[in-house]
Image (cartoon, rainbow, N blue to C red; front, side):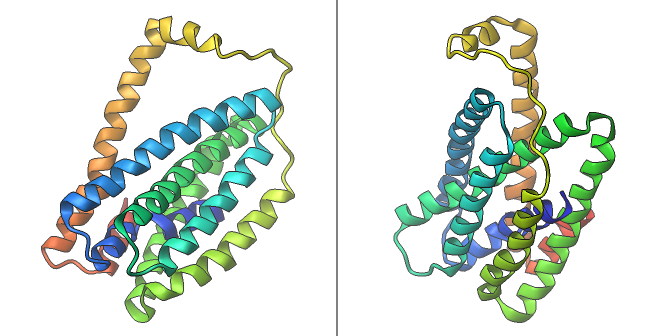
Length: 230
């Protein structure tokens, strides 16, 4: 949990400074970030369905986590590419990041529901440590060092994940028609609206606030501290 959130901080907390460094204006950045939402929706639906169908989380999580690492390495190794290229890669990085975290949380809940809160706290710690250390490293060595960090820390996290047992799932039939039952559940839909509004506020904090920090002269280190303090 600690290493996973640490590596996810590497790929997201410095995303805005990086695409700003690449020269994208505010409108272009908004399209790039909107693509993250689209990828997230598609990947979460697909991964959730596949996980329920297989009654496994581990293999789905590992697959998406590997794609996240590879796409992230590609993103921070790329310069002077067309806008459509970054539209796809940034969307893939953001979508895989959110999807992998959701799967990891579900995985831990199913393995040890009673201790989830304390285990999840290590994720928050990893995010804070990762965001602050990354900002300090980038200030000294630049964005070129990020792929190396992703390979080392991401590799350790992947190896540790292999040693953890899969989730405990009951056998159950699953069909696409089950979605109709969910949509007709008013309490469920109200919950969806609440989550939607919370994530809308979260996105404003994640992206607009960081843009504001950079606009008033804040450095990458200040951006990292913002994430770390949160």
